[in-house]
Image 1: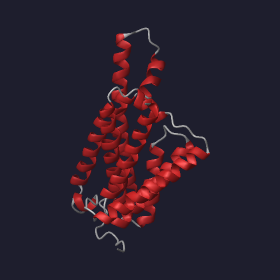
Image 2: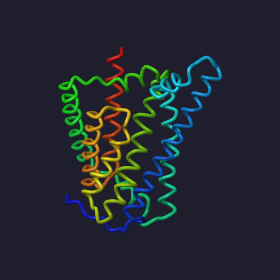
Image 3: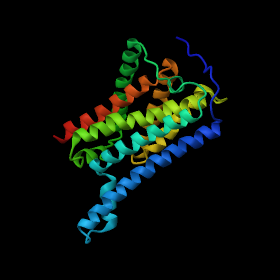
Image 4: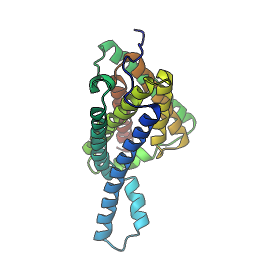
Length: 245
């Protein structure tokens, strides 16, 4: 199937859509920071002898805190995206976000390609003798792995795909930047979001973002990159849990 250009004009200019994307991210990180600050305050109130800087560093990699913050901030920020689209519609929200159910062959093909990309990515990490410790730290401090899976496999991919391959992507694709600009810019911003990882992993995240963007463009459906994002995160957590057993 040949991708067709968007038939609806964007509700915002390029700079407006980029500004609104940054605004949503600011809201997201403000909520997560507020929740993290609350946990720090609670710990210090229970033991005033603790070093605030040490407590703050421990919270940054705490899986339980991250799970709670991601679930709350991701849900609120996803609602904010819905509100923005509702306030200034150029098409229905379903059309704008490409909430179109694809055919089963598309699911199988793109997720099969994802597995191949994951294997290639792991091979590169092994070649560079890279050891991922952030995910391990999250899992070890999650206290409730089910909550961590809900946050990392469910809420985080949903929010990020709604924002980057939905809200931002469609706005850029409908602009003079076209599909190519939408794919590259959405992937770049998404990669920058993951500053907790090293440069090698961030570079790989950028490649995954390009792959997700191409899938979104080719299938005209947000559900394809969303499913790939969920599967990728699920496998990352599952492999981490098996290593730690």
